[in-house]
Image (cartoon, rainbow, N blue to C red; front, side, top):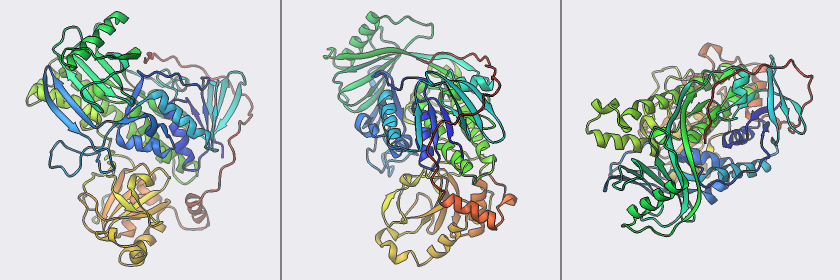
Length: 583
């Protein structure tokens, strides 16, 4: 088959190409730039623990080498410090957490990294991946589709016609792909503005992130955020008034000096100013994320970022959701409804995030808004902002898809566990088929479903002693009969799960269903639903069905990615769509 065409070589497009390659799908990445990342220390991204793990799993070494995991979080108001959170820097952190000191696990630490370092690490990983071809100086100007694929044309030194099975627009807020599709991109402009500086200095909280609301010093603004980076570098953001205050170099230096002095007992410590800028945040959501064989992801599909929400983190969640669905479709082992679920799940999740941010903004920025709903107004406001910055609650928690079209049909054999249906599973330790003990997260992203058995006591026994005993033979037989490729894993315990529970997990780590024991028919029905088939549409066993199943479990290696010359199609018209710059 033809490769997948990815338009845009930012972190989202690069990550998507690697995620597809991990599942045996070739791709061509069309980069309109020269491929050189301009170092901008003030342009950084915060990744939640699960998305940092995704990027690292894709081979991005800079996540470890040039990123920093925060050791803690401080929330301050005026001169008081009402809130402090310590993070888990190891493997014991959890995505679902509270500030209860008796909680069994601390929250997993977010990762902070310059965006140019993240992109460079992804490009280095692509250079080692034969299934990905990265084409620079290739600006898209035409997209046309037919029943079997997509044809695209790029301008540049070697203007070329490309043929692909699908095309994904990861080309940012001014997306050419979205405009060619005629998809509207409504929303709000300049929801928040921040003055930004990257500087090297010493602050009283090494390795900790800080949110300071209503600092008691004149002229620095109502809200300051300080986020640490490696080598003593900090990114500091000052929330600007909504009236469009002009930030001059002198005014920014004054903010820096007064802020550092305020945090360091009245004396401005030595500092080296590395980079500055103004960060303007917009909230927009594309009306459609899929038009037949063309899809949108990242900033081409959504813009968000106010009150601590993280736009690139959400773009990588698009990748995590889309890659396995596109891979199964490319390998011809899934119905068309599976790709439809990408828009249903992700657009709904982003819409909920934008709605929560828009509802919180009037209260947080001085309006009436939520004041009547929050017990303890200021305390509630601080908690809302913490949610957005640390990845929990409606502003930041990893999305769940409880009403997904891929949801498993209810059955009597289902049991509740600590993870709601459709939510990301906990990253517990598991025993893999090769008898190694790994994290559950390490087995994701391979276009295969995970069948997880909760077997107390299994952690102290070698696999060879129990793989042929108890429930295992029947479970492995049930997993082999599933309509999707799968892998059986065993864990000693899972939060909230009874002994001998069986969990079915999607390739992106979301829980499909949990059953009391081995129930082959119900497990099969859940897997059918999760691949986009209604129960009555199950594949019939036969020569064709067996061939499809064989293709899913071990597809032949795709041919090398090469440009394909095709006849020039009729010129596509450019849909006019109002978008805005993102600085």
